[in-house]
Length: 263
Image (cartoon, rainbow, N blue to C red):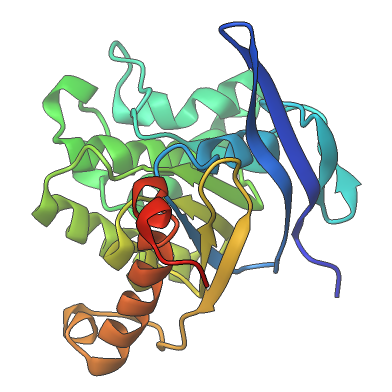
């Protein structure tokens, strides 16, 4: 079967203060349909650039991204994007925020209400459907953003540090909530994070990127069964994979790599 997403030799360069800045260099990766991958790497290694190319928000300098064999040129409802910032409309209720994309698509009202109610229930916000964002916690706002992305029925979710601004306890809760949502309504997920434990806990595979310019450094399978739970975080196998990912990222950090002895 063809991959759901295929990065083929993607490179991105920019002009920065009069100099050429290369964010990605010949990045290639295939992502299967329904797979949940996480992407980690040193700060500035091109993780967000890679996601923006996949989202169609940025054109690569070289190479291409394919979705089901079709080249990506611009944004599409089939690719839902969730950023660290919640990007909710503060004057709209949860229900109205989730319905926003459906309103633009002119989905008929009865069908729109059915979809919105299902997505709000999917993320556990039914009791808060008529609340404004200012009445929600950070985790609830992010759940609303996830529901809004799900509402337009994307085949792919692209998530850039979505839990980065949350406190530790809320972050763990949101990880479990996201996996529960994914189990009930599977999508192909590309999830960027700086948190190694989060990367291992969520993913089928962890993608480790090399320091700038961003390249694929290592792909680490996560052979832990779903559903996952807190007990699994304490297992010997979880810690073994976590240490493998940590070491891969650690030795890609420029300041550390520069001090490492030659191989």
